[in-house]
Image (cartoon, rainbow, N blue to C red; front, side, top):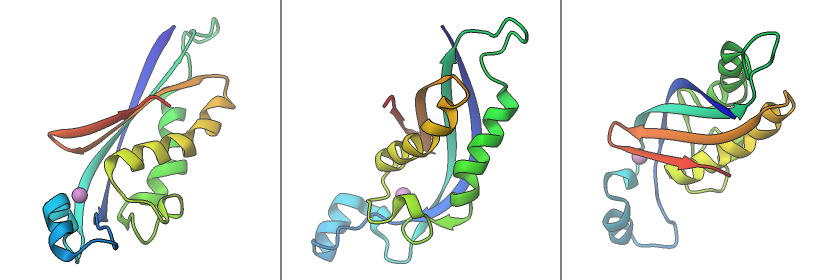
Length: 136
Ligand code: NI
C-alpha cells in the first residue's frame, strides 16, 4: 500500500459561537474565535489517499487529478467564503477545524472512491500551530 498526499490552500472566515450560551461563556470557551464580526484563517488542506501503483503509470492516482478534485469539490465552495453562512455542507454545524475536517472527508469520499482508490486521511491545518486529522 502506498500513500499519496496532495495539499491545497484556501482562506475562509468563520466564528465559533454557541447560541445557548452567554456572551461571557462563549468568550471563555472560544476566545477570539467567538468574535461577533468574524475572523479568518489561511487553511491548508492535506488529503491522503492509498492504493497500489498502477502497472501502466506507476501512480496510485494522478496527483494533479486529485488536486483538481479537491478544488472542484471543496476549495471552490469554501475559498473566500464564510463557513457559517455560505457553505452548504457546514450549515447548522459548529465550524471548528474538527467538524470541518469530518465534513470535508464526507464530501470527498465518494468522489475519490469512484476512481478505485481509498481515502486515508484528511488533515486540515487551521493555523501554523494547529491542525486536525480525520481518518474516517
Ligand atoms: Ni477560528
